[in-house]
Length: 145
Image 1 (cartoon, rainbow, N blue to C red):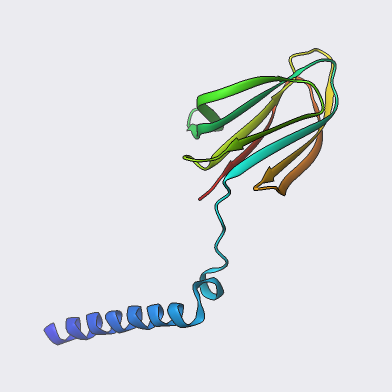
Image 2 (spheres, rainbow, N blue to C red):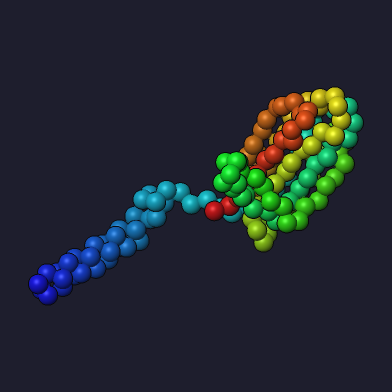
């Protein structure tokens, strides 16, 4: 029985060694998929029409929480900056040290705003949408894993 344990652990070690050799000779990208580069900056661009200034909340220090009673996910902000934004509007932020960003657009007016929102990570367009902003804010979140 002791010999079987040794054989099993021997084969496990050989299997792990072969896997590591395969990764090193073929490249991790071919087996595990391409690796993503961590973005260093995020920018938001807003255009459109609004009955007045919109509020743009920007944060890199937040987490997503889950309320088990309601079943809803919520964003918990630890630090944020709110800007009164006349359209067109543009803002960039550094993502370090958390490498996450929240851009939230709030319309404090009773009339609906119609916006086009673009988000760029390191200057590359990552997200683009057109929407109406009324009672509910519009959020964009990015988290590097």
